[in-house]
Length: 540
Image (cartoon, rainbow, N blue to C red; front, top):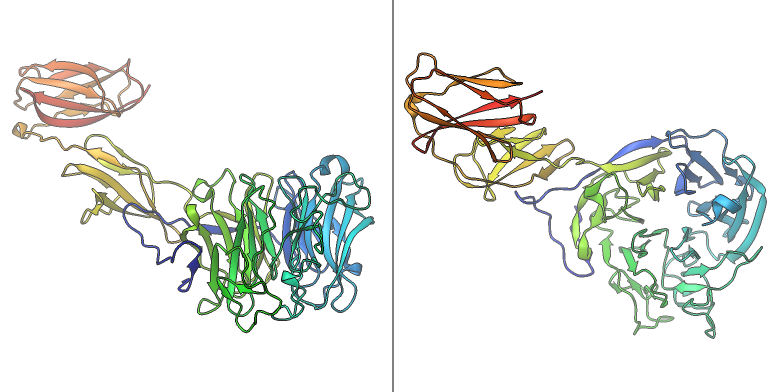
């Protein structure tokens, strides 16, 4: 468990399950396979997924979960993938891709530490194959070391292209790039690539446009290695998974449309604390620095490299809606935040690690890459159905589940562990239903008033046929009974029919042809006191 998790607003304790709470779980369903070190998933505004292989190839997964044999793009010869953090790392499709066929990639070029390159390509005549000779190099940044390349590349809600650079590598940011506004290293940049041919422009509202001794491309600073980040497609908020050094991993957040140049603190800060082992040389000790919304200790939960995810905005899994889902490369635990950045729960425990990136399809469904076996997994709700209970006047019934515990007024009812329960006392009833994968969900609540039933000399009439179509017959053959009033009540508790059943009559026929199909209760009353309740199902 995340025993040393620190939240930006509060210290989070264990998540406890009660009668009124439900655990939200995810599950991973295999979507596609056949990849070599997949590190990125993107979509082009249609049903296809585009998966980056770190060594220089992009493959397509169709909406029928088939991995196409012919790569969309293969630039392996010009990609330097000699070190694990180098390679083909980022992909973004132009907002006008359907018309211009442009897409952008970020990769490491050259030998040794090499350089980081932003290039534009164009799709060919075949929509599943790009033209490898269409490359236009838009930006090249020399790298001092082989690690910390960042690499995530996305168009923002404003239509501009954002790119996150790592600090250049080594340890403790020896060149102090994170706080040096004269380099793109350790920064996120924001540029305009629309209608500018073989170059780009600086958006007029970039926070440092026109500033002295500051690159105008810079949009944010103080980042160590923003390996994976995303925009919330609903709010435009930016969520960054910034990979830490020796002690802490952090998640940063900046609100949508706030172009004010946030400084997230590296190398002066790691998580919420001064960077261990780093003096203040090259740091603006006073900040101001933007604190992370959460920081995670490397010990004891074995975190090593946070993998930034997405806020789920898909239509399929309402329990996940609005939750930011992310993981760590080493620990492999999937976790989330609820409203106000409070810890919601662990979504899934998976200590195998090796998850390297999340992706979002056109509809907002989420996927994750698995470096260890070259697979793509779709994130689905491990608790897909809310349990629902109904009451027919006698018995509470829950929809199917693997296990049940009934509650009355928030307290467990001893021994009430079946799919149905006949309440004996007044109160508000719920059930905690168990499903596969350690999933438990709380049902809706139903207020129950238990009405006293007289002894009626032990008499309960026979009711036939079952189900009834045009009429239903009540029989008291051979049994003494009092004068009765028989009420027909629908599933919502509405009285829909009343008949008198004299003491001397052994049968009573009730016309049900005009009733809607469904389950009804027949209630027999003598002098206003309820004597018995019977069920009848009406079909037509």
